Amino acid sequence: MNSKSREFLLVDGYNIINAWPELAEEVKKVDLSSARDKLIDIMADYSASTGIIVIVVFDAHKADKNIRTSYVINGVEVIYTKEGETADHYIERIADAIGRQERVKVATSDWIEQQIVMGRGAERISARELYNEVRSIVEKRRAMEKNKAQVRETLADIIDPGLKELLQKYIDD
Image 1 (cartoon, helix red, strand yellow):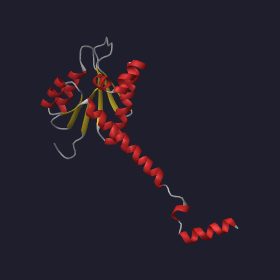
Image 2 (cartoon, one colour):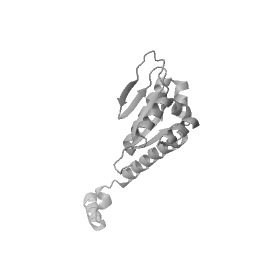
Image 3 (tube, rainbow, N blue to C red):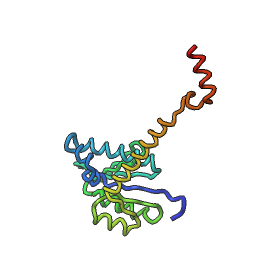
Image 4 (cartoon, rainbow, N blue to C red):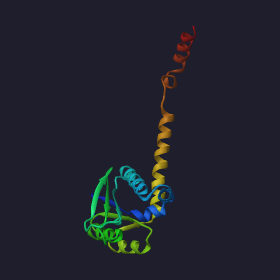
């Protein structure tokens, strides 16, 4: 692997949706489409924050066609497999094709799938590990934004105390 290699994260979409509490709840409260959209938004934010190329793969949902569909949504490639093709099989093929030249991680909690992709040169990250990583990024961003808000200085904060006192007397008079 060369130092300029890219890093990819292949996400088993439905596996992650079922493993993350707020996405599983979204399926119950709203619908599966809403949970998919939320996952894609989260992964777009993750990709923008880390520079990792994210590909989210969903099993064909009620597909009656023999073609795979692919979209780019907010910088994330979203794949819907063709009829008869599972997300696992698609992910395995991609890991096999690029896993030895590029850095590839596969996000799934499916133990068998983890073993297969690791044998094809990819790393694995469980749904829980990815969830914690995403939460950590969000918490760091919130802390940075909070610090930025606190650091904002007014003229009164940075002016020489003697000059500040003189100006205050002028204002009070």
